Length: 509
Image (cartoon, rainbow, N blue to C red; front, side, top):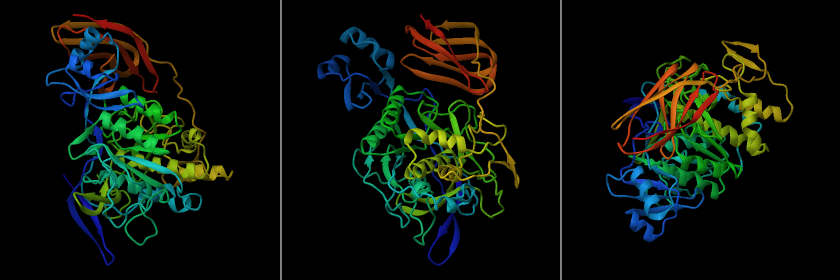
């Protein structure tokens, strides 16, 4: 797939077509890194030998280790061995999952930084520029080879190669970091929304992806280095306890965590965007309409410019992507990308702007929500959360300035009320729960009293869901071990975002 890039030089502007790098996301539920497991026990060498595993790394912050086991060994077998040989059963055991790219890049052209115009960047910079705030970009690294690199760039960490040189080979992390803090007013290239902020590069994805444990390591390491904001333009349909623990480690220390909702066009926010304590970010195009690829559902909090490269809505002659510098295998140029990955750094930059203006970390999310522009009916909605970020309004509110509460409606400004809680606050009610187990096939069915999503959380294995639209009759099928015993809970989320959980069930052979 190709995209049209804007090649800039000191003398002229021209266009070139190149292959673009996708946005980042965890791979779908069920995909694992063969032979690697996350175990919530610091196993001794003797215990490792007994179990037939080898510890690769240990993380004190989340009290979990990355262990290697022979091919063919699964979570169940390790759990049984822990119970039988160490009397330490019940500990966290989950597969280390692969991570891959998430961006919905495509082609033609786009005209510069319409995304910053949408947010009123030039007026924003009269109030704040992000000075003194450190933003960790947990991604593919950040390049130092370009001429437009963020000015305040710290020594980072590479959890893919295990060194202190997180150079970007894919372009994605450099693009994300540029939206936050690209060098500005230097006569070269493009600007950054919080251009005086400091970027801490944390490389957790390489040419062939990474893993959940690497991301968790990256989060806790960034916190320990003094990051005040963490940007994760990545996501997964699979819940991970180790990622939630890492996020908790960050938020408990006052770090604001921001993550993408995903690019599947479904009402199911990816993880870590859906995790508790994370600001989940969806994407809009140039006309502040939610992008067709942008995921919504429980966990979405805000939307921000992410682009829609299927159109040229502003008639600029370029497709409506987000323009930033990228570095692909040592070749530096400017590229238009689209995706919730591109929307997320706009929110991370807005957080940095507010922190630099004196807002307390615990108040930032509420301020962004309270000042967001509703993109339809007032209050939270499935596809846009609490609305489009308005960092200019948020900054002005700190000085008590009166700001128009404008609902996006063509060229007119329509007065709107403050966001209201969803009218329906009742969680779905479960009934007719049934199950059929035949050898390695497990089918679970249930009904809800209103349309809702279909999800099941297996203890020790994670959360799995049906990406289809909300329904009242639910059926999920799984392939399981013939002799395994599984404890699980049903989860359904209605169209207003109310989550219902069933009692716990056990499936036995």
